Length: 399
Image (cartoon, rainbow, N blue to C red; front, side):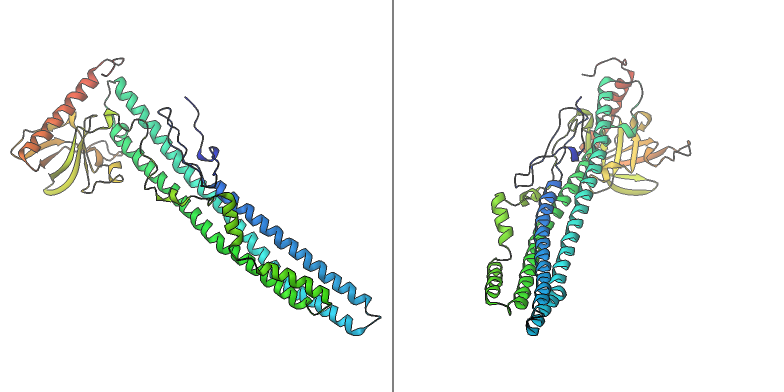
């Protein structure tokens, strides 16, 4: 049996499309894995680091220019008082107005990177947790079905009934798929909001350069022309240009939006269609017990149980039946028109602390006499199969 690794240890190249679903189904204990979204976050973090370097370079440039202004003011002090004032004012403007804008922008970039890193570690953790729960239940289903096929002289407990275990796998795979899709949805939203954040960065840089030009433009003509050219070049850049060029270079968006349109990732898993997981009969019946009539969904399993569920047929209700009768230990009456009765112990409500429990009579009503006969025959078949199963030798092979 090959080793199973958690989702974080199985990565595929995004290729600009967010990656495909990775599947592993070679043995009973293996299940379907989904690639995580760490690489998408890494791409965005890489772009934040690039913008951080841009801002740091501009901070260094403005700081060096301010120092140069102070140096110029000292050298011109003995020559012309008015020139000293011009350079001193320029130094003060740069330190008081331009640098604080860049420093605030740097803090915003670092904060955005921190939030991305937090999501990068949180999302895959939840997916891996759901994956491990699914893996555990698939292993239980594999052991249960193998035990059923091998035969045993002991009855199958409700907690090991392949039918209920399969419902548990269905439920956990559904939950795992929902968490993976939610994680992809969050990454899609992060990616869409990232465009606006990059636009904010570029617009802030443009504002910084505008103020820089304003303060420095009153000096020598060649400095005026140089800084004007810097501003003009920056203002020609559309706020979304960098992002669009980045997407064009990648040939696609880092995350594929089509991946979010899946309603469910999983369609099959080991032992899903094993014969022990298929009920002998299932459908709606009216059950009278303790003087109360209740309409519900009932199932007769090959392990010998009659289960009752709520009226709605969904995965969550299939995990824990509200009625559980082990038919070989029950007394089943004959069919009377559309009714038949079963007398036995409801295992679903038994108190594990109190070993004493009571036998009750349950009267079931089908939609027609033919339907009642089908249910009665199905229960007889379940008892017959269970009796043969329990009386077979331990090493007998089940056909």
